[in-house]
Length: 395
Image 1 (tube, helix red, strand yellow):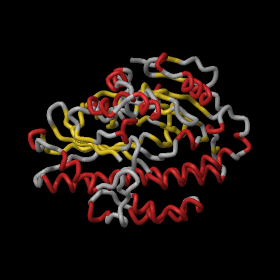
Image 2 (cartoon, helix red, strand yellow; image 1 turned 90 degrees about the vertical axis):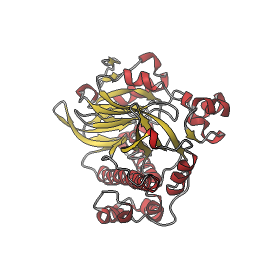
Image 3 (tube, rainbow, N blue to C red; image 1 turned 90 degrees about the horizontal axis):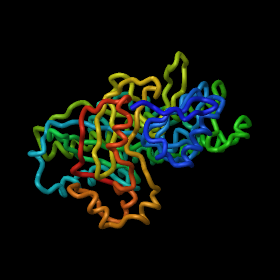
Image 4 (cartoon, rainbow, N blue to C red; image 1 turned 60 degrees about the vertical axis):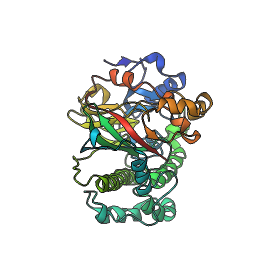
């Protein structure tokens, strides 16, 4: 499927998916974004929906500027997946104990580790830990002062909301592990700090939406944000790596001879310095993954729908991007009003997971149809593996 041009009078807006399915509030946001003088173009993914300042499911290419609210408050949020040597036949008939073991090894919701994880012991495969933690001294002082201890204990924790850990099966019966999380409290605190800083700058006084306030190049504010942003993105990557290492320990304890393929890890709330259309740009993907030619990516469904391992096709019109998932079709509050625990049980049949009022807002029915989302972006990615979850751990 090719894109639809939304006929912006300013920067181009290219939409993959059904134009009529984009709610009016989200359309307004897209035109507000495109109207910013720094914007080179906007690519809109088929999972697009209304967000704060910028729509979720949008790729914003800017010249010498970045909007912290367009990045979002969960800096570096993303996915990690890993194939194992196990098959469906290796799994026990009942998966409750395995789910409980995962929940015992990886804190979920508001929980955190009692002390920082020994990253040498859990074997993440990542290096540069000393340099990474020493970077904490350079973060925005108000955030750093109140966050360091919590950041160390939250490294390797899931959080709540739409974050999850899953054990999945591919169509050919191979067992995969997959998880979704970001930069936890420290990323949120850094984002909120810089969003407020940007709103107070004079060049943002006349914007159509204060949440679109930007930092511009060659200013102290931009340099401070970039430093904190890229550190938080690294924190998110390392957070997922620690969780995946802990998850491998759980699996290996029960299946001693298991082997693991290399991880696939992607951000879908982040900024990258890239060249498109012959220009050096700051590309913000808010609910989108990079899908350069040959790039491996992860596009998950909801807790009762299929997920996909994909390979990017390098579509320049989309700034080499693709969707980050199914995307919500209703708010959390609307989902709680619409659905019941009985609905949740029915829609997650066959999945070992929570089936209680606390996760009704994550019910599959609150999300768009992942099959339609994938069909709408066939020129952005090719499907490599199709997955369905058998265990889903949520905070």
